[in-house]
Image: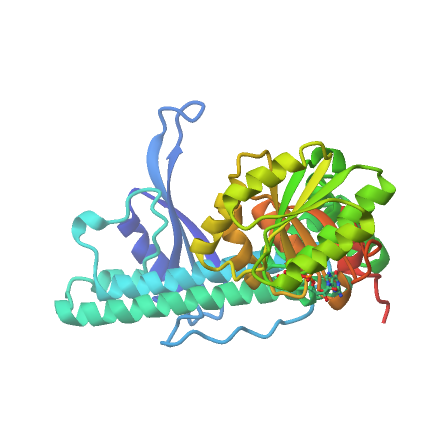
Length: 441
Ligand SMILES: Nc1nc2c(ncn2[C@@H]2O[C@H](COP(=O)(O)OP(=O)(O)OP(=O)(O)O)[C@@H](O)[C@H]2O)c(=O)[nH]1
Ligand SMILES: [Mg+2]
């Protein structure tokens, strides 16, 4: 490709020069106001710098993705796999140049279809691109309806080009990654980590001073990625510190393990931490639900209060006033309806200083968890316990929820055994679980 620079008084002056030098299909890539002469950049003469380009084969035709097509082109095949960060930068620059040329070509066609009036000669600094040839033919305006149709077509074409350019640069950026980096991103995707966090991880890795080495060393890359994810999650850790919790309501969808989790925590606090614990259940929809918690309460020797209405919960809290920790069970519900959340909310406003903790099963998809969690988050709930870690191998939803909604993960539960199958959330352990070991295969 041939690129030439012209310094002229006004853009139209450059057109015959460009046409003479680069042919009639040359395009203007940029126009800029500059000052020439003068002293220390002052008192100089105002001039316009015009950069024009054409293919160097002499034909003067700049091949662009838009030329002669009404549909977006499919993503181009990469010429070669680029392996280093320098190649990635080169690939991005290539895409950027192609993008500018594509935009120039569309603007060229627009200029040809709808010639700018005299006053619309590009002002200095306008990064418009005019073809040298069509600008001269511009004196015959097309009928307005033809222009309308053409403009719509061109707009569509522009949108197509935009999509294509985006795909192309994503493809080129992807091709520029090394095999270990690709593998890492695939692992994150397979773990259902949202794209925003996958991109953030890649960006932070690429910003690391030793990225060049990391990118070719899977083990080191995995270690670094785990460290970064640990750092993201660490601020949300430690909220399970029992001393911070005094009275906690557990809410969540049916069957996620609320009652079992309460039993685990009651046992852990009573037996291990020697705290005095009281239990309340508002799950009176099913007789068996009360019995389930009563069985645990009897085994542990802790009091259980059963409440049938919000008014009664105040009485129950009074009864258990002396206890260091009060855990309250609620019925599992379909919390998609605001009405039910308001019910819970009225339970929460029983005049006591209570916290609400969401219980979510890791077997659910992020979007389902989010649908349950969002109304609670809007009511100020910011703590969660994630259960059934043992029933899945996909852990990304926790990261998505925690980072997106700043939800503090208190505990992870990983089985049916009371009290053993629960432990406080730890960001280091979780990131190790999420990424697994680097697979050399
Ligand atoms: N595998 C596994 N099972 C669990 C876990 N936590 C609870 N469960 C089991 O899940 C089932 C439901 O547990 P519950 O504690 O009754 O759940 P819930 O949320 O209280 O249910 P509802 O009160 O009906 O809404 C039981 O069989 C539990 O043993 C866990 O972390 N892992
Ligand atoms: Mg229950």
